[in-house]
Image (cartoon, rainbow, N blue to C red):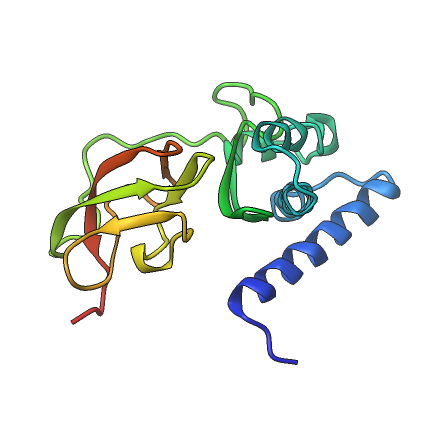
Length: 191
């Protein structure tokens, strides 16, 4: 069977979620990979069923309780993002604190080092304008090439392949009907 990368990822999430459900059924605690897979699977299914974005986010926070996790997982996973297919198109669903607020400085906490880090050093940078022609807000995540965005988002960018010039794992929200100017960086290996 030939699968698109999106179909492959969706089936992988479903398998991880199945593992999480089996562990929970026997009273075992969840580690980060299976807990995240379970939340993402539920998000994708709620989106598929056409539930409103706000409801999807709210229900995603109820899927896994903090007491169902191995120590440190809640702190190690401050947010979950997954591209979900709603009836109106693909939307990046962003859920902050999916397992409840972690204890500050507890096991698994992420602590930033001093100093600055240049992202994508030496790569060409530019500005682009994103116009959301859809009826719902759209999140554009850091890793997605601008030529592969939700079809509701029109992109005015320089020639070549670009992505947002933001830290990995972050996203930019473009409100319904709005335009937003963003910093972009050329994707590595692009001529």
